Image 1 (cartoon, rainbow, N blue to C red):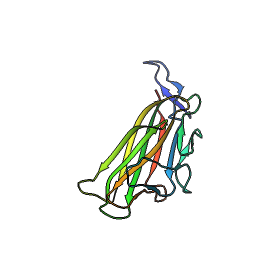
Image 2: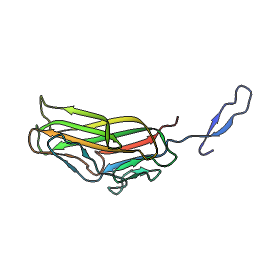
Image 3: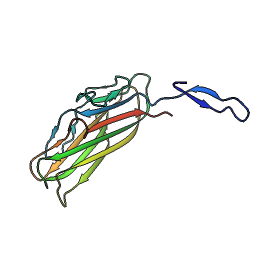
Image 4: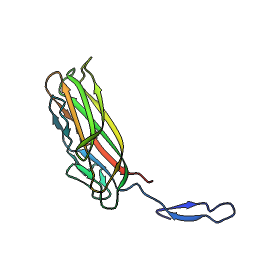
Length: 173
C-alpha cells in the first residue's frame, strides 16, 4: 500500500499496515548564475532559486522556499537537516586565501565550513556545510559565502546549477 509500512504485531499475529511518515517539507535549490564575492571575507547571501536553470532537479514540497530562503510553514515546527555546497573560485590561480560557506537561521550564522589556503593560495574550493536545527514556525534558513583573496575577487560558481546548491528536509522524530 502506498504511503504505508507493514509492521509486525508479534509472533502468531497477522501483520498490520500503518501510515508511514515522510521527511517533508523538503527542498532542493541551486544557484542559477555566478554570484560575485568581495575580497574582504564579507558574508554574502547566495541567491538560490527553485527550478532555474531549466531542467534542474530542484523541488519544494511545501512552497516554503522563496526569496532565497526556506521558511518553516505553519504546523511544521521541528528538527530539520540543511546542507549547502558552494564552489568558490577566482579567475586566476594562486589568489584565493580563504573560502567560506555558511548556514544562517533568522539572519544569524549557525554553521560554517572554511578552507584556508593562506600558506599556499589556490584558485578555489568546493565547500560543504551541514547543520541540524530545531526550528519554530516562521524561522527561516539561508545560505551565505565569503572569500578572501590575495588580489582580485572570486565568485560562487553556478555552472548550470550543478556546482552550488542548498537543500533541507524535516526529520521524522
